[in-house]
Length: 437
Ligand code: ADP
Ligand code: MG
Ligand code: ZN
Image (tube, rainbow, N blue to C red; front, side, top):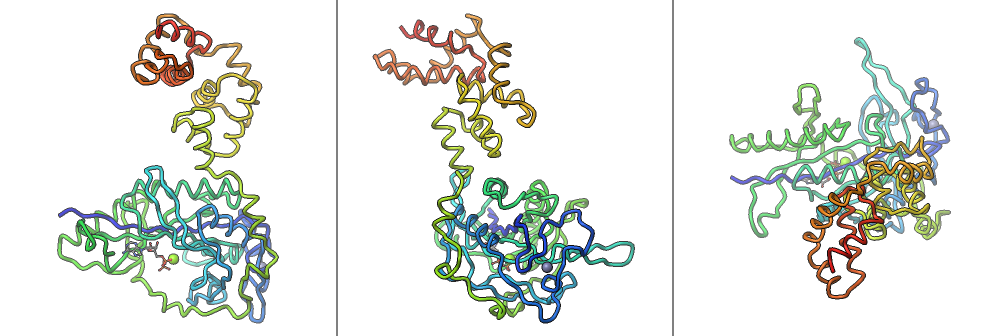
């Protein structure tokens, strides 16, 4: 039988706002003395009243806009009731029926469109530590703003899940809404996995009637390992004729296997109901201007990457590396402004693994010019590269021969790419002109 995994992802991201979601405690708790960032609201004391953090809502909207979501005119907070020691109130304030952002999408590198079901606002819980037989509770994290982003079950392979998660991490950093550090728990992944027999047509599109939710994944590497393991486990179970059921499993990174945590509760087990202590969030009557947020959105990672390819004629991989962070992208562009060929600069920064914290753009230019580091300028080597580029850019070469001057640029670009930017540009052009006579 030919099986196909069906995967949906839930990503939680902790926002780096100054204060918590529903009180004025500092949300910057990392490394702080336990239970020092607390107040009656985030300790869940009776009678304490929450109020909404505007900055968190704005961040959630930025995430939603970047993911092409509709921003709801009216949204609402609800209580998600469950009993657990790290949840002081006995419920988490979350969004369920009326989330802030809905119906978005994100395009992966392979062109696949992943539908985003929702990006909603909620709050984090406290943190338990199990120390030599006893359990300690730290409420510093309780009430820190979280945004949860839920996809439709659109993934069919692990690589796509990885690409998606990486793209989200990069997005959070571009938007400046979170450090999105997985190890610190700023960003947490939960994968929902089921397996079905691969079929053509409508019946092939039906979702399996169960899903296994994988929790405790705190690195991209573990996520890939956990999903791969889980797919194999489920296929083996199906082959044995077992019936798989809705459950939550954890990932044991040491033993490299998933283990049962609990049979999954259904939404009705949480007895969701509208949070009576908070007003509904109405875009019209709030102090938040959606238009202003739209106007202030930065260039998104994928937009920048595409622009770099077009504007500087970079290859996909060069553009991917140079747009990894806004800082690196800015460094590159600031260097290009100082003159010299962009591809040469791109290769220099990438190959030399330039530490942009320690070097200035002017120094990069000086190094390239003065030392001509690794510059290829021998007639013989350049001719070899030129001939190869002509062969690879047959059409442009032919166009140039036919009199289209501008077509030469593509062949020059080919030489620069083949030489990883090291060919001496001043010699490449005359050489190609000679060869293409
Ligand atoms: P819950 O609160 O129970 O985690 P959510 O609605 O937040 O529910 O998330 C459900 C996740 O499960 C979504 O990412 C969705 O795409 C995914 N999902 C739903 N059905 C399946 C399925 N049959 N196989 C795999 N994933 C699924
Ligand atoms: Mg969920
Ligand atoms: Zn507080």
